[in-house]
Length: 93
Image (cartoon, rainbow, N blue to C red; front, top):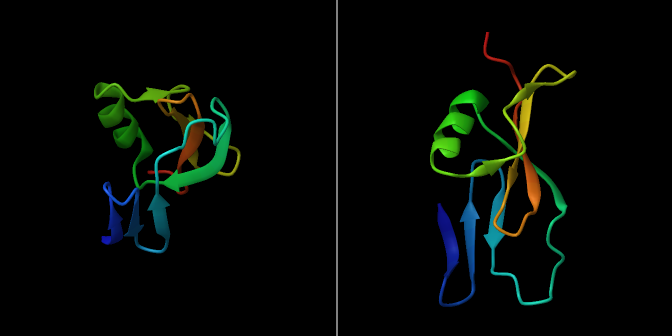
């Protein structure tokens, strides 16, 4: 659910189930690009998520892989070559 802001204002705040996210554009020279951003987004079914976004041209580091902690994980590569993790905490049996 959108809480505040707009593209015109230069920022938008969203309320997700248990987190508030603020999105704003990068200012030229403000941040490095091509780095690991250090956050993860959890999805219910990572294989379906991966297949759907991969079909739409979203770049990933590879297909989801089983992890030692029992879940699945892959990484998205954004348009600035930054990466962040997509995880499924509980495996679908």
